[in-house]
Length: 320
Ligand code: ADP
Image (cartoon, rainbow, N blue to C red; front, side):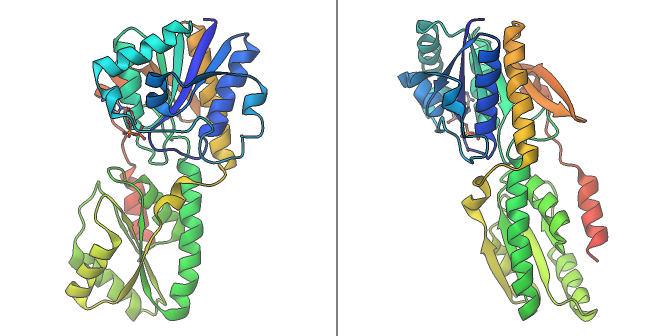
């Protein structure tokens, strides 16, 4: 392989930049030309493609977001859109593509692979919900952003003896809520993977107050319900007054943590290694701190990301 492409797609995540840097530098180290595709699959279809040099990825290792920009592109869900993308790549002699992104972006990489174009999926999403890896690029940074906010809210919650509801990202996966809840010492954590019982929650909160707790922190993953809706529910169930804080998009930004930079560097370089070995159609990941790769079609069809529910149980035990 003499020419490869790289793009970032879907929701951006901190750590995409060090992943791009690793792809570019690893490829150039092996005398392979690298082309950056700007604006995800939309840029692939319209041919927003430029050659990247060593300097193009200088000074980005510590920056959040993605220098290649990202986009959502409904057209790429069609065969015609995918064919247009493949034509753009082939017209430039680009023989393989590294796709850094989440769930949807992996579906795009899978579609290209099924049409005979070699793609490698690199898991870049704050949601931590990609099959075939223990952790995704951006999760650690997002988690630290949430913890920073939780700690600050805890200060004011203690001063005013208040119950706070903090809504965090996670439509289908409760990873951010669960790990932030555990690391932030939340009294209650609501995740999409588990049903909640409002009576049990109010009982726990009241018991805590009785034994002198100065505040309570409740973390809600957006996929369960909005923080405001849950505040209403608590008010109706037990006349409990709460304050709501919705963290929103700050969770996507910020300088990637050291852990995310290391992960991004390892996974980006691994993707290039696979293309050099002529192995397309793979999804790279990390399991038990070892680099792994799986058939991307099989991974998406047969593997499921699983939340570690032992952590959920532990958080309940520790927040009594
Ligand atoms: P993320 O990658 O963060 O999960 P999205 O779900 O929005 O973000 O997906 C990003 C892009 O991937 C979509 O806008 C679309 O271009 C492409 N994509 C998503 N699903 C498919 C699919 N089933 N087939 C082909 N491309 C897809």
